[in-house]
Image (tube, rainbow, N blue to C red):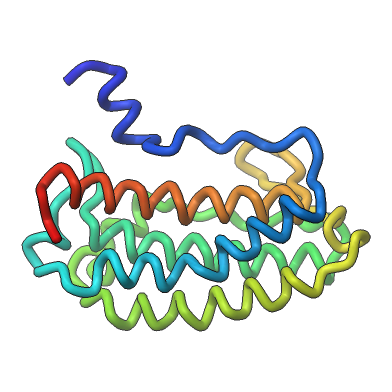
Amino acid sequence: MEKLDLEKLKYPIGKFIAPNEYSFEYISEKIEEIAGFPEKLKKETIDLSDEQLDTPYRPEGWTVRQVIHHCAESHMNCYIRLKWALTENNPIIKPYDEKLWSELPDSLTMPIAPTLNLLNGLHFRLAYIMRNLSEVDLEKSFIHPENNSEYLIQQIIGMYAWHGNHHLAHITNLKKHKNWK
């Protein structure tokens, strides 16, 4: 497989690109993408068989099942990080090893329905709190210790909207490639 093909499989919608300006329209659009993600994910995955759920979306990539569970884990971390940033002064967050988490039994074999339900409630809460952020809140931040970088809440809104769309595209592209309904 060519490097370009593998890169397109890894990043079907491209890598996240931060906007030059975090306008009200941009933030609002990204919050709505976050709010709508669970329903889109459910629509694309709820009728898949176990064999389909256990199919990797690319060579040496996660299975569809692992991607679904990863989205819940990642977005739970987003929710906690958001709360920390809103209630503490530029806190240092705790990173997690998503690869190791994806190898645990719940990610490998658990049914997806409980995770889809979790995402539904989680994204309702994420969108609710995000819709109620002030301009001052959007400028609050946390520090990620992996690269010692500061992330503003307005940035993470864009990043997590992208993250959901990114993984949704992994699934929809695989379905298209495999001609699954």
